Length: 168
Image (cartoon, rainbow, N blue to C red; front, top):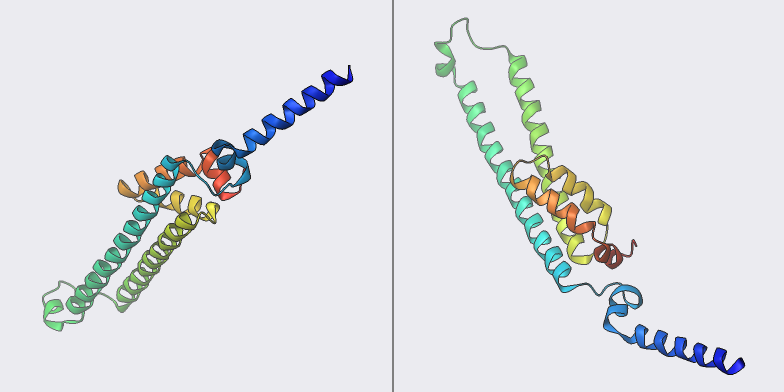
C-alpha cells in the first residue's frame, strides 16, 4: 500500500514540475506579465488608437478655439451689428457663450489627457479600471469613439488580459 501511495505522489510531483516549466503555465501563473501574442497585439493597437483619439480631441480643441476667435471677431465688430434689427444682443449672451466655450475647452483637454494616460497605461498594463472608464467615455463619441470604447472593454475583459494586469 505504501509503495502505491509513494509512486502516485512521485507521479503528481513530476507532472506538477513539468506543468510549471511549460510555456502555458508561465503565461498564466508563474509570470502573469507574459501574454498571449494576440492579446498583446490588441493592447498595442488599442494604445495606438487611444493616442489617435487624444490627437482628435486636441484637433477639436483647436477647431473650437478658431470658432471662438471668429465668434469674438464678428460680435465685437460694430459694423456687423449695426444692421441688426433691435440693436446688438445683450452682453449676457457674450458672457454665456464664453462660459460655454471654456467648458467645451476643458472637456476637450480632459478627454485628450485621459486618452493619453489610458494609452500609456495600456502599454504598461497598469490601471485597468482607468482604461475602462475612458473606454466608457469614448463610447459617447459616435462613431469612432464608440468603436474604440467597445473594443477596449472587450479586450480588457479577457481572462488572459486580466491575469496580465494581475486582477485575476
